[in-house]
Image 1: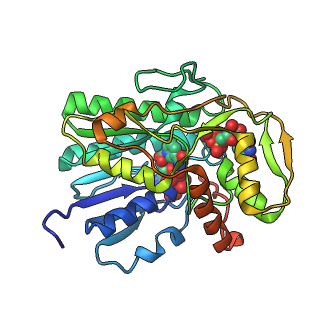
Image 2 (image 1 turned 180 degrees about the horizontal axis):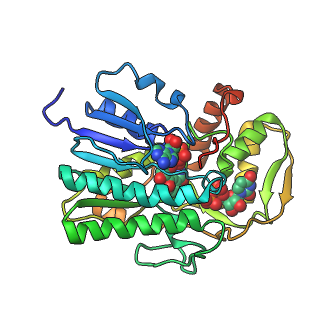
Length: 325
Ligand code: NAD
Ligand code: UDP
């Protein structure tokens, strides 16, 4: 093991983003602890790492105390797809808030550096476009997305207060829509839904007229940004936007997925979703300036990789989230 090897905890490490981060850190020779309660993921995401001497898997819930000795913590544990986080909204809020308190307490005790996986949802349905980090957001605190948006906002508050009050060494990244292999096929997110529907030959469900926009970042680009932030200049703690600024309407996305899969599926308009942000695009000037980071993968290339992954898995082996009260 090289002398630069660190002991690193990844909460939510078996999830879509967490498992790619674990791959990156294990392959770099770090001693990685993946902690997950498997609420929205399954062991298959990290099965290939189980025999590695520098990888350890712990089944645990971040709302409960975590007592480990580490140098760095990536806090990714939280259901991220709207269908998943609305399944048990109170638990979602507890995961963000109690999870943040537990990792921050642990970081304080171990003097570890701790990075929070925050989200573009802190901007809500934005009135400023594209969204810079200084925009304080437009969030409905009592709507169906509030359990996630307000939980993540409260977690950011806790990170900055632990930093100011207790000098905890924090990093906060605001992640915009990210996609790629290991997305859960039934998570209801737009990329996984459209690809699954196209491959099954069923209707492509477009909510509303499909004129709402998102900007999609491929997973490997995002992991580059996240590790750059953790390893970035001292004193640059964020929040920093990470995402791909190229914006598409959901109708355009549906058409590209149909083209790339060669599917005969038809696009069907479904009722609009409550509090659905109408547009979203990251302003990534800060990440470019401070981290020398910008995404490299265009949507068609990333979608082709994701479609290949969805073709390779047995979708019947994936289950919806379990009750978790
Ligand atoms: P995911 O659902 O695949 O991963 C989340 C992981 O956290 C899962 O493995 C889940 O089982 C685990 N988890 C949930 N609650 C937990 C708890 N109480 N204790 C322990 N583990 C728990 O979703 P993802 O897309 O990989 O998201 C990872 C993180 O990135 C989340 O914090 C999410 O808010 C953030 N994020 C993701 C995106 C995106 O587009 N993928 C965008 C913005 C923010
Ligand atoms: N969406 C859609 N059809 C689907 C799933 C999602 O039209 O089958 C839309 C959804 O209304 C939203 C966008 O796609 O406008 C992105 O949704 P997703 O759940 O992926 O993420 P988020 O809303 O959190 O950005």
